[in-house]
Length: 70
Image (cartoon, rainbow, N blue to C red; front, top):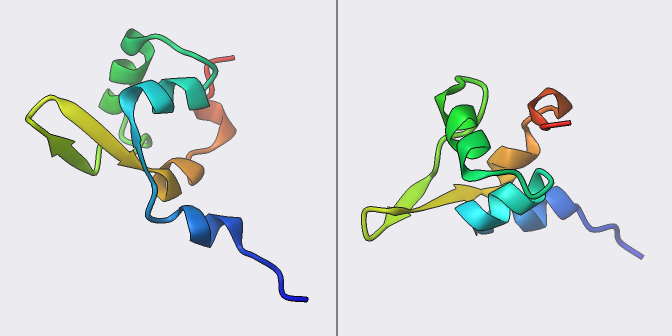
């Protein structure tokens, strides 16, 4: 039986801002915008229509626990 690398499966998954906020404990938009100003937090990988931002899950997985709001 072979093992599955979950990080490898997630590399191409994009999350919108709402999904990113839910990933970090249903944080506010303000929290997310403040993290976007931090050099250690991944910037959105792509935009759709100029406003909708998407992050790669693989980049968010690399963010340490110090970025968590609690």
